[in-house]
Amino acid sequence: MTQEMLIAASALVALLVISAALLKAWQDWIALKSRELDLRRPTAGADSGNREGAARIELADLKERIRKLEAIASGVDL
Image (cartoon, rainbow, N blue to C red; front, side, top):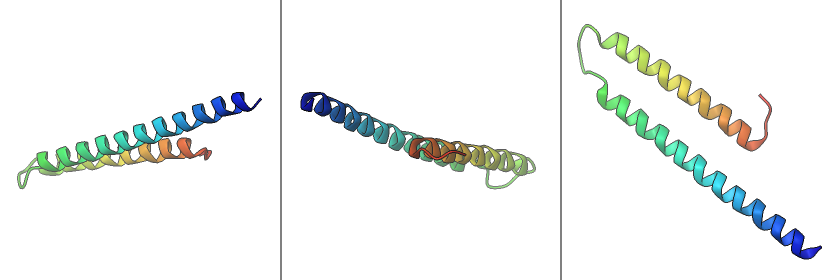
């Protein structure tokens, strides 16, 4: 029985480590995309309002997805 518990505990720890690494990678990827959006943002121009609005909507959508994924990861029902 103890060997089975050790295997189960090891599998659970491995799953937690992999999940944490994937969550960190996801957050870093989102930060990278956010920086890319900031660099693309024009300084001035007639069309800059449309692009900024679209970028903000996309960023808000990504933040909402992150919030949902973090809620799923922590086991909270939305």
